[in-house]
Amino acid sequence: MASRRTVIAAAVMAATALSVDGAAATVAPLQGPAARTVTLASPDRPASPSQTPPTTKVSVAADDPVCARLKGVEACVGPDGSDRPGITVEDTADDHMHPAVEYYLNGYLGTKYVIHNLGRSGEVRGSREIGKVVTFRAALYRGDRRVRYGRWKTVRNVAKYPIKRDTRTTPVAARAKSKTCTTTKGAATVCFAERKTFVYACDTGADKYQARAEYFVAGDPTTRYEIHQLAGVGTCGKAEHGELSISMYRASVFDHNRRKATRLYKYN
Image 1 (cartoon, rainbow, N blue to C red):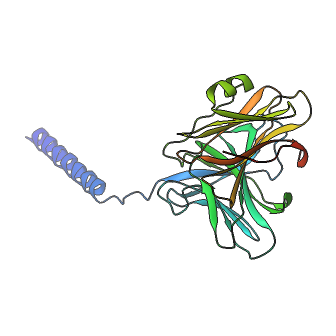
Image 2 (cartoon, rainbow, N blue to C red):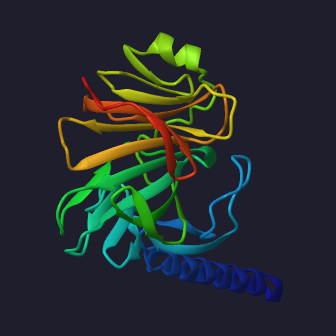
């Protein structure tokens, strides 16, 4: 009889424990909104396409854009649901300089992209077409000369439909895929096609200079886009612009930030 009472008591205690566990599970607090990892990179420009800047990590709410600021400029990267989707740059000062955002996509440092905001103070310019990884910084220009820039930041997994990395296109392949091309002194080629518009900037000269595409889209004279191809001869960088068409374009050759050769802008 004593043995039977012991078994019954054990069963009651087990049931009570399960009931307590179940209650605890029911009233457990809900988890907060998903967070993404943002990495802060070195302010120095990476030395070569194969290197990755040293980083530290911080956590931010998933719907908030991540911004980099200087006096006169705010550059942000945000998900589709934020107030700054894609990559944007805002002019925050009424002065004689204009802001720009410089960025790399998908961890590949062989192609740098720049968006120049040529509008007035308070205006925002940018692009929705970004990759899975965006490494960016804010910069300030006086004319074509960069006078100030900030630290690099890296944001991951904010685009719902990120563009893929395209690093294997040669100048010959770019011409074959494109509708229109222009060349500067055999060292830089700009090619593009429209309807799901893409633009290639190709380095075609075996020298120390870099090829650069400079262009405007959708007839807007207040936003200049640039592709800087840094990976060397026989390589092309690619940018995408969705349904926006190219309005003016030219191919140029640069020694770092010094222009060595260019053509006049052509109208599309």
